[in-house]
Length: 245
Length: 392
Ligand SMILES: Cc1cc2nc3c(=O)[nH]c(=O)nc-3n(C[C@H](O)[C@H](O)[C@H](O)COP(=O)(O)OP(=O)(O)OC[C@H]3O[C@@H](n4cnc5c(N)ncnc54)[C@H](O)[C@@H]3O)c2cc1C
Image (tube, rainbow over all chains, first blue to last red; front, side):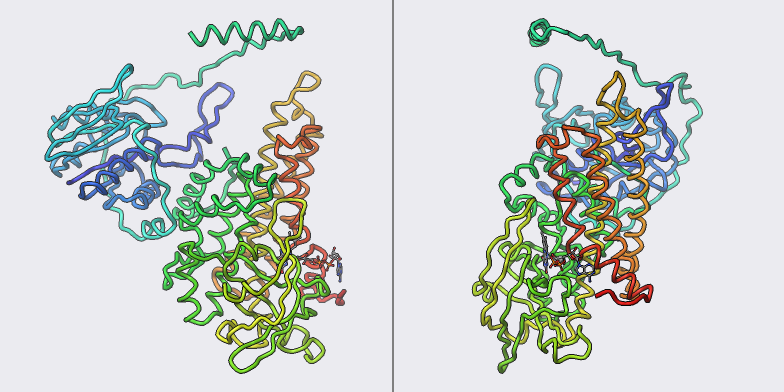
């Protein structure tokens, strides 16, 4: 089986601070492997372990994305490719770049996270599936393979759907699908020595939307203070009862 | 979240940090607080630590290890302490591994390294300190006498940590009496004692003010085969520099981790605790001591890194010693200062067990006296580096 896993490198969201206007301060933030990309890698590695195959990790990134690819190597990805030229989040540009690279590679399964931890757009998977003209199994929390078919459990709002689809397919995974493994020291050492393919992607950002404002939502706390404990307890239990309905 | 600070790490070092951070998420402060109550060894943590291959860090590549250096080991231990944990229960295996890789025989390395890496055996204990010698290590009395192909060892040790928790231990003994050598550091030899010998050793646990496994040890007529001698007889003190210097760098790193924890806790509490209608951190009397510790943390971290880099690149062990001792001295003093700043910041809540401050406070105190007292570091710097008269 020929598996592609799409890997995004994002800023470390835990370290993100905002300025006085509520705008994110993006300078000098450490980079991190996106949370759902880790789930996607883990899902790909589990498929390889169960059914055999080869995994290609693909990232639309920059020169600095090597660290994300090395982490993917340490988790079990076989070949890593960086499509260089990423400037900002624009899922259509990303889809074009990735499509150009994978369109003639005959992947049976293309796995990616359902959305990324920085922009949360959730657009890449459907756009890519549309471009490739292959089906999308979206928000997967379980993947099995039988013959040439993929059987995926997809999580919807109210219930789960089990869907079978002939390969090739695009699968976007939800965080619930697995617990990504922590790379062991020896795997990290091996990963460090593996070659990474870097290709200039020359992305076209010309008709990207113009961002007018990007600020954190403000939430004002009510800060109600009860001088009398009994009143406070009564109000809290009233609110809790309301919330549990 | 754990307090981060700017530092220049390689991609592999960052990956290592990611893995250890991922593991630490499973072992929060409650885990360590419970162990502190029961004074138990962190078995489960060490098992997980082993599974992540972390004992492979110092083991040379040719023996199946990662062949990494003190820099990586110090990153790992620092991170554990910065998360509220305590690395003291297992750091011993790191410095023992450097000793083995530098001076043990090939047979011994083949026998021990793969088993140490996989966790089949543990080697986290070194008996150097003795009740009658104290800081004056060359004056130790434990003696190994050669009979045929064996040595018979007799003596007494104190504060030998983790002997119960180790399969293999290192015993420092004299093979020439103190009075019979010109240079007082001559005539000392290092012996590896395996499970066979350990059975014969008697030890009793010493109750301590925080969760540490440390013992009083009685060695009576223990037979040790000559293969278990490390390197050459009588030259052990020189070899010990490859235990003691790495140990000091690692301990400095643990203290740096402690500082990060105290800083993060204090800064967080100072920003959220409201008294006189404003956060206490608005008062410079509360804010500045925390900022002061942060600056000190950055400075000693750089010194520690310099010491580690020099050791890893095979630099002059004397200069390593100067840097490693200075790093251990400053880091332990600053960590203790940080512990007190946290205590003050938390007011009465600092002594309440549930905030965890008093536990780390107790733990941070150790490194001012062990593995070498800070007075002895200063006398080393004063005499050996600055050529002032010897004070001991
Ligand atoms: C929890 C714990 C774990 C330990 N683990 C180990 C272990 O695994 N293996 C091991 O071998 N040891 C271990 N030790 C022992 C530790 O290394 C010693 O306690 C330390 O080296 C000091 O020796 P001492 O306690 O005999 O103090 P002493 O030598 O009695 O010193 C007492 C005080 O006098 C001061 N002093 C002595 N001489 C001078 C001088 N000339 N100038 C100025 N001041 C002086 C010292 O600085 C100190 O403040 C451990 C200790 C503890 C508490």
